[in-house]
Length: 475
Image (cartoon, helix red, strand yellow):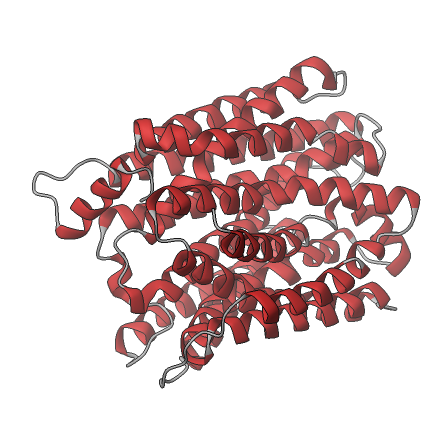
């Protein structure tokens, strides 16, 4: 790989890493954040969702902004806003200030992420180089969450949870310099922003997530729970209608014309619904039931992280030999087996080593085999003018899965506890039920991808292109 390309990849990976880290770096710090800012258990869920929802909701608008205003410019703006909002989150004197700062972080991430992925796609066109670049990007996107748990635990135990926010500032300043120096200025073009589409999608997803959070806190019998869920569904349906009629939509519906590409988006959404929730529930189990410290809970994810990053080096060879579909299906099966097994052993008397250690490694291998094929298939056969939108849609599926999956499984957790003063046994049972919910999501992802990736009797031009790319290990 040429040195200039290596630097471009380093910049994009570093940018993606700090963005992904911020989706999980607060998880091991949640107890300390609650104490320092006097936040309730329900309001603490918004420390996560306050970041994830605007991140997922504005990703497509960010992708569109990159297409129209230039991807290098939008990447730089996103990194700058992310650094500023990170500093404000670290300084937050109140819970409200923290949640607003987290929302601005999410918006900034929505600008930077699709611009970075589109730049990666445009910079690496040769089959072998592109396959390796996507493998590294996918490993960082998927494994960054567990690194965030480790860093969050370390900062919480030895310094303060606020350091997890402050650390983004010097990194962001360095990235701004590197972007201007090493990434060439990209072209702009005329067009319009689908502002209403973006706003309706964000409000719709927020209403849906908030409905599940309300169900967890107040139960399913409250009218406001059902009003919020209905409003979310109606608004998301309205979003589809807006996109169908818009002259320049943020989601060109033609992206879903390819059955396999649609399967990649939906499959990613479902597996993240299950996978991201594990990063929330397992650390809570380790701390509240097994007595781990914040740092120990972060360190416990090292087998997952190590296995996932190890797969990064094996994936190009596996994809070249077996193709994206077979590697993807094998990875999903490993993820299902590991997650199901871990849901069965969670209990008051459970031992972390060796069972949980081995299972987390198996789950890491499975995750490491899943995200690169899903990224590659989500970008396959896309026309050049739709690259930004397709890149944004991949990340929308990821972030929407994070927020909605967590909201749904929190309601499962709350229903499983069934008491206002849970013992360790009640807590372990509720965690086990929530992890079982993760298994159902990952199984649904397996079924969707199995159906969508079945070969058609008469393949379309796009499907033939996808199969050809897979033979080269670069779809």
